[in-house]
Image 1 (cartoon, helix red, strand yellow):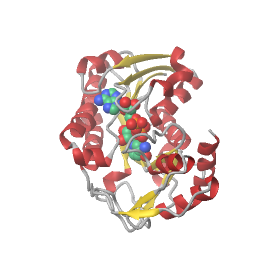
Image 2 (image 1 turned 180 degrees about the vertical axis):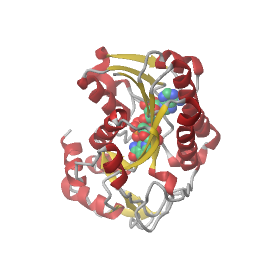
Image 3 (image 1 turned 45 degrees about the vertical axis):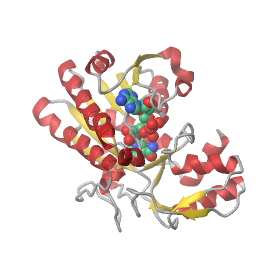
Length: 303
Ligand SMILES: NC(=O)c1ccc[n+]([C@@H]2O[C@H](COP(=O)([O-])OP(=O)(O)OC[C@H]3O[C@@H](n4cnc5c(N)ncnc54)[C@H](O)[C@@H]3O)[C@@H](O)[C@H]2O)c1
């Protein structure tokens, strides 16, 4: 397969690139290095074609997408708080960039586009979220991911391009950048505990997340590339288990040693509960998460 991974220098994208290279696929990466890092691609740099550019620039997208069979569209401003601060910018990248990718795909005859969508589209829930449930996006980021997904849903019927939208829940693993103020909670906790710094949990810490290891998210993408029927498919990618932020911190503090966390104000745009119903991914993609949260944390700490 000839694959384009947008955002391939980022946390999830770089793991996906490594997996594709390992299977012998020909891989191009399109990344503007706004949050991605060249070091993330160090192990595969000689094996890939790298296009430095933006998904919002048609010429960059065309150069990167030429010859691709499948596009794994990971590039985004992947942050709820940043979208709250700069909604016009994040819309341009997260929605506009997706339309550029789809438009290039139709013009260049790319067979399939797979989108990194997000659990954020569901908003706050008291029960497990199913793909057919009405979405309730509660931040600009969530609206942007939902809008991008809607483009993928309608695209096959008009243009024929196959599409799959993967609604990732809370992904964690090696290379998640703790330096960013917008980074995932696991990487921030690990970084601060390792440095002996105090940790502040936003709100009371009883908010829940469905954590999924990056290795599983990579496998879900490979399943989405291979599944025969992909005309506007939408699937949750998660473990189907809720973990509170307090429990997550407790597990990490046990593993790394650390004092009790302090609590601060809740963050604007954060949802209270997030949990996935995962039967559709099993039925339609043949995907099931294999890495437990505890094993995933252990792998992260060992790496
Ligand atoms: N990490 C999670 O828990 C999670 C959950 C749900 C969805 N997602 C989605 O998964 C994808 C990957 O997220 P991540 O956690 O690896 O984030 P990340 O910030 O590490 O990766 C995003 C990558 O996209 C690149 N990028 C950003 N804007 C770009 C642009 N205009 N043109 C080209 N490249 C650009 C960045 O430089 C970076 O390499 C994103 O679409 C994100 O919204 C992530």
